[in-house]
Length: 86
Image (spheres, rainbow, N blue to C red):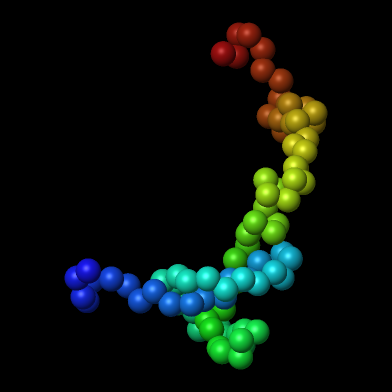
């Protein structure tokens, strides 16, 4: 491996913003925030919006889209289109 061309790969703690779940892994990302981990060492902390703990695909919770009122909302806002409008 060539020296001097690879980014610094170090341990980092990621925290899910929604659930608060934390996990330790390795990454090249940097952060000014730090956290003391269970082993007593201090690691950079990166807060992320979605992890496997909060993503609907991995949790099995699916979001139901409200398609019923979308057309009516569009027609109310912009008016109903007729054939000759096209």
